[in-house]
Image 1 (cartoon, rainbow, N blue to C red):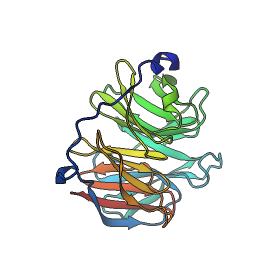
Image 2: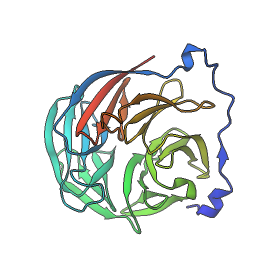
Image 3: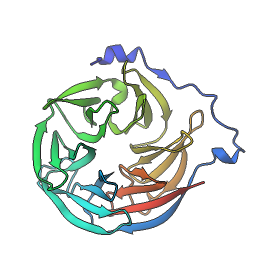
Length: 284
């Protein structure tokens, strides 16, 4: 684990110069074509694809994001937007980020990480994160480790056996939110408007982009650019060397954009408000 003082000296801005000319069609932001919307969810925050690729798990906060009220649950939804089982797993407080590994579903819930059996939905373990404030996204690293973002403590935990230990702590991780593992680095969103990358070996943080507001979900497009959601209701296209471009703005309609996934060219976005799940075809 590298402490903030060590990391601060290692922070560098991502080099520009790789962007294409503004008049190049290849550099234009992608278009989002609506496919379907599923209603009947309760403050949905995150979505992951099942291990067999046949359906989706959706986390439902239920009440407030930090309320220990037992109202949270996990739904199962088909890939074409039909509800399979609204309350597949229940008894959570405010479940948010999720990740799958070896037939287990890992779910962040305020200061705990739940481990569920993906067949039965039964609880395998409930782990408390030491000194945690607001656990948010969960991700599986290429080396098999499960990591969890703590939005309140500028920290990312890693699961070590049955314990959660600090993996990175740094001022740049203030309000850390979304986690996207790539082959050689971890891409990170923050609610301070930054898109970051962390080197797996050195834990060095690099600023990829700024100006994305309350950053939440992130996905990499085939050309190496990114889609980044801002939870009050904007979707940004982020290309290295260019300012973030707004692809969609749903703030006036009060349709939030939370921690989404991109599967086979389809963007699947939980909308905390108004309690829906939306799907879009990503096109040029």
